[in-house]
Amino acid sequence: MKADSPRPWQPITLSGMITDQSQLDSGFNGEVQVTLFGPASDEKTLGDEAPETVMTFQNRQQKLFNGKATVKAGKFTSRFILPSHISEAWKTGKFSFYATNEAHAEDATGSYEDILLGGKPLKSPTDQIPPTLLVYLNHTNFK
Image (cartoon, rainbow, N blue to C red; front, side):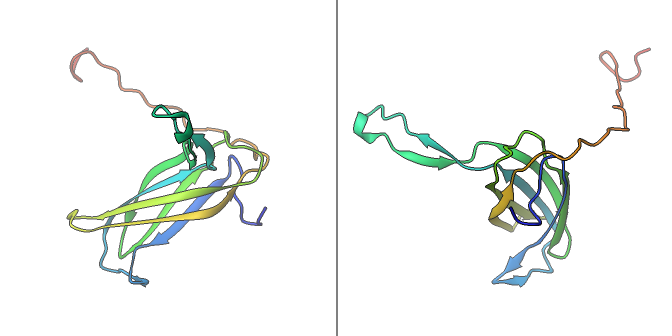
C-alpha cells in the first residue's frame, strides 16, 4: 500500500491536464470523460473454433467511477467518492481519459494504470441531502 492509495468511501480529487508533445495545451477547452476501472481479472476466450484456441487475457470489467469534467486552458479536476464494492486486497486499477474540445474538432486520450486500490472501507458518509422529485402526468402543468 502507498500512503496516497485510495480506500472505499474515500473522497477523491483528481487533477489532470491535456498535453501536446508533453507540453500543456492551454488552448484546449472542452470536456473530459474520466473512467476508473477496478483490478484486471483473467478471462478466457470461448474456444468455440477448436479447444486448443482457448486463450487467457486480462480484462477490466468493473467500472468504479465514470464521470465528466470541464477542461479549461488544458486543465481539469474531477471529484468523486470511491465506491465500497472494491476488494480489500490491494490491487492496481486504471484511469482512462477521453477529452474533446468545444468544437469537437480535436480529441485527446490517456490512461494511468498504477493506481493502487483496496483496503478496509472508511466510515460511509452520511447523506444529508434528500432526493428532489418532480411528479406529473403527461405534462408539467397537470393538477
